[in-house]
Length: 152
Image (cartoon, rainbow, N blue to C red; front, side):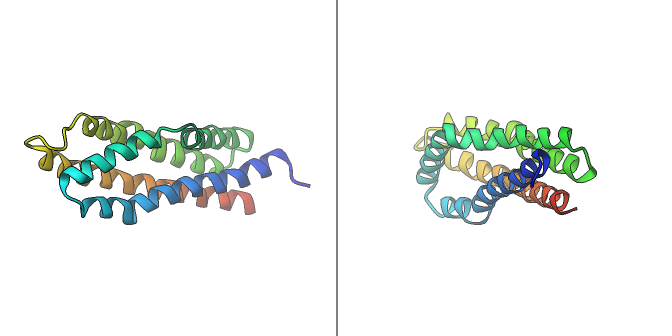
């Protein structure tokens, strides 16, 4: 029979992998697809994505996974569970808060048809994607750490 920490660790493996996968999708093809649009179309599309991303389901999974990761690290503090929690909390949630959300908020105020919108869009794409790659790697690394903890 599985105990609480084993089950919680296995759920953390899946939850961090799901978020890492979402971030991977953005890094590997979503943002590239948006970059192929005209700047006005790309801006409007990303503004819409940013609005719809703030949904109860996504926010629960994104932030609930942080709570779960911390809970696992506290309940079963090993090098792998602590690493998994730190990678997720700092590399996914922390980077989201300090790098991606501020860029999203700035883009929300851009009029897609205004002068300078194209420059704002290209600047957004470069910075947002770089930090999203960090989040993606952190999410996958977190999942890997929790997987190692689960099988160790």
